Image (cartoon, rainbow, N blue to C red):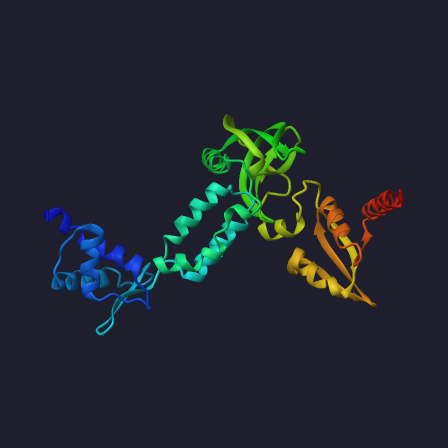
Length: 333
């Protein structure tokens, strides 16, 4: 055995512990000797393995260590704590599976990487959720490249240009416009990735589905400073943002008051959080929120049997017109 290979023994023993051990599967020194020879072709005596294990334990014996190595004289040595617990990895994998903005191919690679953060026993437990092709996924492979472009543009304080697309009846993306924006943030909302940016052409902030963007490029023109835009003098307030724009419309935020049945209060809190002002109003509740009227129109229609818009008047009229048109459609034979 060449001397340089033996110098790798410390690192290989760590890999063996990461891959094959946990509290339920401790490894004896003989186990590690055998694994070193079988997996890496490194021959090492038990005494040498014991010294390497002591070095590893000493190396990771500090506060906030990414891993904790534990030894039991009778049972063996194992990784007691890792950078991610198995339950945390499951949550991350579920997030990848349910994310419609990640292609099936990227999802598979991400899940493989996440599984690699635990041991071989973890992979066997996630087989039942390893079903990427059964989920609705985007087919836009430019997503991760777009993320890199946006990050670079924000870092360099430059505007970006891109083609914005929408799906046709054949379920394929087609270009609908060319956009030039000052990019500020990528936002995950309602299981969708959105690019938040200011359009000087439209003189307003816009929100664009990242998985609907193609042909992105960085312009040489400086971006418009966020704090010079009305309403953003103090930056982005993410808590207000998430409740006031449930469907990512770009109209002006206004106060909307509506009445709601008691059974739907849970949905109000779910969508608008603690920012919603709720007061008892007889057999119903009166709710006041700061929200996009366009988004509120869609939300109120979704909960039609439980919600009545009280103000502003134009939104109430719009809902009434929607109901009239819908009724006419269903009266047709």
